[in-house]
Length: 252
Image 1 (tube, rainbow, N blue to C red):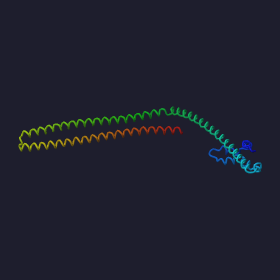
Image 2: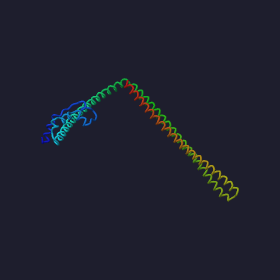
Image 3: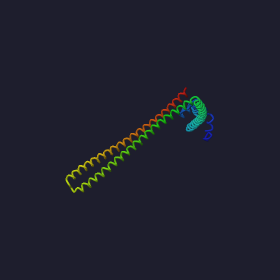
Image 4: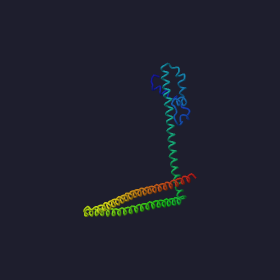
């Protein structure tokens, strides 16, 4: 048997498989274990026909037997696993189809059984939404009103400031016409100081009003964000309650 192909062909048919359960086992199985436990490899290489051969011919034949046994069991295992995979895939497809049909049926039953409850929840959610929007609009109106009042007050202060400035200029002209008389000068200084004090007071009032306006805008913005957050929480709460309710009904 010098021809290698002839040797492979010769030892191909004597290879027998056994232990089908291990061959078809899911998960990893070592090749060595498959060869020894699922084929007659040990019987073949220990047979008198092989053992009576001289070296290196005996080692060559044992290697061919080993290859044939390994190839045959791995090919068989691959085929079994492919068939198993196809069966599982078909089963999964069938389960998906059944699941889809059941979901359609369940949804139809839910619509019939709980359709009114959903309508009520939608109306309640819409009412809550309108309440939040109404509150937001009210806050915006109040904010606009506060801004308008602030603008009006600032305009009044500006008019007062302009009047005081005109009065100061008039006092300055009067002082020039007095020709430097001490009494008039003192009266002018007193009036000038009073005018400056009044102007400074008005400036402080304007600064205070501007600061109050900024605080008012910040407070309005905070209230608006709080209302938006409250609306989002309400929407989330309704969605969660609806989801929990649907889940509990599906389980029951």
